[in-house]
Image (cartoon, rainbow, N blue to C red):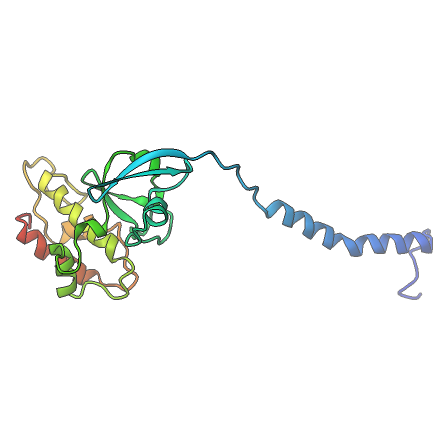
Length: 219
């Protein structure tokens, strides 16, 4: 029996029609899968007005309600010192200080911080007038590629204020103690754990923070 012969009880025309349909099936399935995999573009909402107070200056903006604080800082205000890393709130490259507390700006809506006091790396120091922690990062070689450094420094500045307020961490020996929490290496490592450095400069980062914390009286 020839391999090209139709099965018993089937006509040659029916066999060829079935074979043609099967040959086209993968293409149809592939097209259906591609159609399902293409996400629908959500409709845009009209821009809304807000005022971002950044580094001591007010900025009146009109942004789409879903714009993150990170994107507003970078795209609308041109403050590109704050970096976009994971864009998931996991690496800390986007850390800024809002009302004295550090946050991941990539997962914060700009609208949620209308009128808040926001400090970015640009507001901590400038060439010729560096913040003490910026100077310590340079002196202690606490960075390599530098991409995570703005977030690291903002986090380090904020954690010293947290310790001064008496905010405890997961490694604070006595959470009932009153007053400032001394910033030893364990405290610094724990409090900086949300800021990742893929270059692995952690030992130098801890040392830089510890030096400035001692200068600030919280070491």
